[in-house]
Image 1: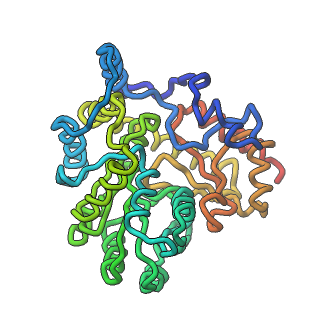
Image 2: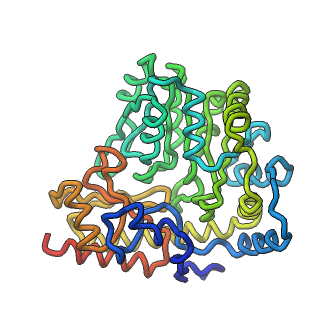
Length: 396
């Protein structure tokens, strides 16, 4: 029995919560009573140490302009990655952003000219494609290979794209959302060696780095490939790990001095986003300094949720194939044996099962026929979800 009660259901309605309150605003096809396991935030209460620290900060009564440029903030962030991953981050390399997705947009504009190509590996987190397109850059897809229920990188296909001089950047998702891969060091080195050979920049989105299964190990790209770190920009955040997405703070690691200057010119000089809100700073420092036991217990609880879903699928949904996640709190399920097209599958989920999930097709054509479930919820919610899916697919 752990110190924290992750079985407790916290009421989220009435908090302007995207996942619950605004589900039909963003997903108008969803019934009002659909159970939402779509948006990638947790249904677990934040660690009480963070909550208490935020109360203390509120009691200071003034919430004026605030900066992260203090020893305690740098020590908290850098100390976390040193302890957990053996990654010694240079303080001068650490920059903040309102989130990883905004950081992607900033970096796309810094590293790539309009019309040039950016390589991604679908099925992948859909804002990658959206931000590339919306900034008038070219999406270049090097799809992952789905072999015997597991995803692998297509190195030969990737290198063929990397040879194209118009392609300037590779965005890596590590751990991978939605398929749950935690890339091994040899896989990372192999893909980085191709990038080095063809002079590509790399953005490594490592926002899920702390959510790892018991038998897995996440290695930061810069740690695995220190020899190329001047061309690697890493995006991290406490948001997924500690359920702080609404705080809107992320930490971006930039080693290249020229790119640092361009980052500051764009984000600070032009857009003036260099000052975070005071609660984000307190939450981040407390999470990284005091909540290591909490994230360890979260991972154990998610392990059990995943085990429950795996057993449930085997017993009640034999046509479904589960891609066993190595990281993230996301489960990727293959429903293709039912022979439904993407809209038919979505309709069954929404109107017959009554669950709101992230449909596989939004992650690219390679995701058609799949569903992504956020399993960072109390067991009772996960059980409700799976039983609804079972009812929705009975007789099909």
